[in-house]
Image (cartoon, rainbow, N blue to C red):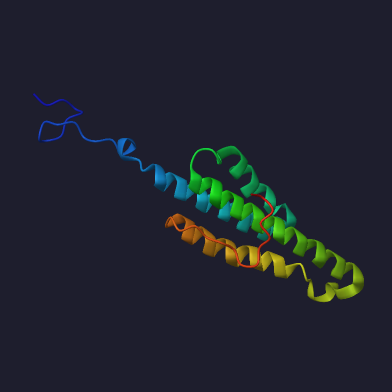
Length: 135
């Protein structure tokens, strides 16, 4: 006799939660760290650091990939914080006509999207020319 939980062969269907791949979840969190930095960095400028940093601090012990990519995304946003400070100084000096703050925001968006794409595929991404303060 088949119940509502049985399939036509008389066996229980497998739950998708039973087959959840922990590496896939880690890759998704790595992608999220990069996307948080990218989107927040593009929209809020220097505050883009807080998204990946909070994710990394709360999930770094869950999986080595999350630890690695969370640190990388946080380091890149920290590096961009220096660029934002430089852009602010240039604006104070009168170079605000072309808004130098656009440069770090564009870098955040472009490199963040590349990093998120790679992290989703499980490839550890390294941002170019980034000072890695967080070890």
